[in-house]
Amino acid sequence: MQGTMKTEVLTDESNEALPMLFGRVLDGEGGGRPIPWEDVQQWLPAREGEVLWIHLLRTHDGVQQWLQDWLEIPESTAELLTSDATRPRAFRDGDTLVATLRGINFNPGAEPEDMLSMQLWSDGTRIVTLRRMPLQTPRMTCNEVDAGTGPVDVGSLITSLTEHLIDRMSHSIIDMNEAIDDLEERDPDSDTDAVLGKIATIRRNCLGLKRHMSPQHEALQAICNNAPSWFEDHDRREIAETIDRLRRYLDDLDISKESALVLQDDIRARAAASTERTQNMLTIVAGIFLPLSFITGLLGINVGDIPLATPGSHGFWIIVGLCFGIFAVELLIARKLKWI
Image (cartoon, rainbow, N blue to C red; front, side, top):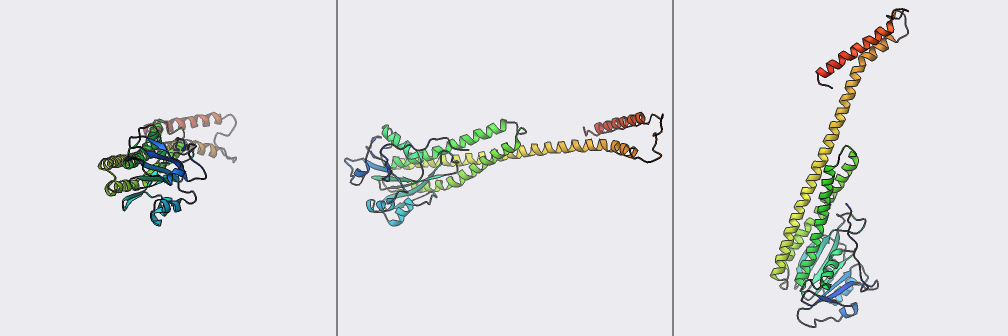
């Protein structure tokens, strides 16, 4: 079940020589303005409510050292933000929030269970998100900011990112359910091996998604319960709703997995029944022709004193009639025993 979404499209503001993919200064009213990398270094809020958001490529050279120098965060935290440790987690570090979250990989050629990670750091005024591979979620939130309908503060920005991450999960679940429905409507006898192969792929996707997304529940719960004071009550309620939605999606994954398992068992049972019917029919045919084969084999040996072998005895027609008679009796017995 490969993803069909487009990869993240970067605008001219991204530069291969710089770690920043894009930057925005939120105006506190749902909108924001772009900010170049050079101005990030000296940024200070021009008025109350402004928030700086920068999205970085964490594999760029010098990102870890820049995080330590500019954000003044501990080396261990900077290492976590730039490492390949992708298991979802979140914790409070003083008055800052640090988190690693996962999203579904919709890049071309990727499987849904090939998860992508996004690291996040915020002190309530500045927020830094980092990724390695293209991820749609930050760009979606950025587009909302550019349209003037985005988050108004750091808390709502974090909730927007988490909501988009979880919402993307529903698309994969819907695709898998549609694939299961399509397989249920298809005649499994037409290409049993292909159908079973698709079902196995769906089951692997369900298991992979649940294995990777279940820890996200704990990370979101940690954000809801342990976030700093600048993470307001309404943001905690939004995160709680996202957690409930994630639980529902995880339950849907279980249902999809069980549906695929039931369909797989049904197809295998029908295939086994079809094979058994074929074997029974072959056994019946062999049983019917066994006496006939015995008679023809016995009378076909080239030795003396074979009955009805003398000229004028009409032996051939007598043997043919005898074979037809035996064949008819065997058919009657098979029908009476309900073998055919």
